[in-house]
Length: 112
Image (cartoon, rainbow, N blue to C red; front, side, top):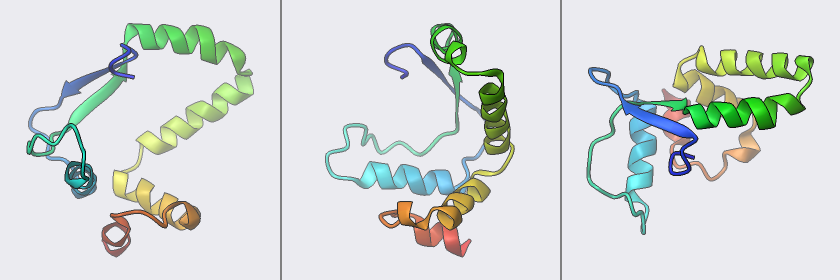
């Protein structure tokens, strides 16, 4: 999405990444064939829709949803962005265990 110009990414200075983010980053960096294996430490980043992304969402996606569906989507976004990452991950692991059977960070999430 970033390469297509739909999403912008900015570094966030002075903020330490959460342990979960470090675990996930390490997982992706250690996989064989990872093109982005730079050896760089994990850094906090802020993702946001670019003007092109916002235009696409407004014109192509939201126009297809009812007001009720948009409300449900807004509530889902509020709940996901309003809780710490670990709480969100624990919720997913508890609610959908069958979807996390191949997780490489499951033990760290469940133990902490």
